[in-house]
Image 1 (cartoon, rainbow, N blue to C red):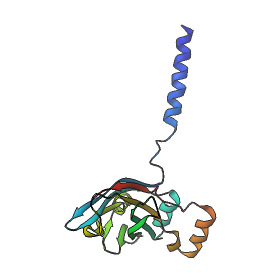
Image 2 (cartoon, rainbow, N blue to C red):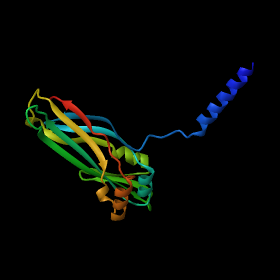
Image 3 (cartoon, rainbow, N blue to C red):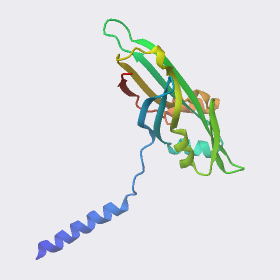
Length: 188
């Protein structure tokens, strides 16, 4: 029966270790969850969902009033085996995330985006990661039954940070936040 006592001790130690460590949240970064091109009338539009998790440094900066600018890039090309790819469309969208300490609200705004305010950072990040019906290319510019390659990515634009923070961003690398580009094929 001494082995039962050893097993209880081992299980007790494992349980203590398991409960001692905090449950880890999602790692900081940008993950593209879904992306698709869909036809609305005579235009192909982009719908995408991205999960954005800020680093503690970025969360601290936003709480202190530093605005963060995110660039979403979408490229649409026709791949060719005999030459370079033929570029059909490049759409770049800049979105701003800011915090108003007086109102205690987060604001998501940008060009051709309706500005919205949120009570929590999580709500603002969810809105920041939603792309709905972003016009990409007219249907009549595409050849039917030809394959096209779509690429979507998002990154934090460190060039829009205040100058002292830009130097810190270059020196430390703790301000880098970007997604792995999502590439998929589409045939109209």
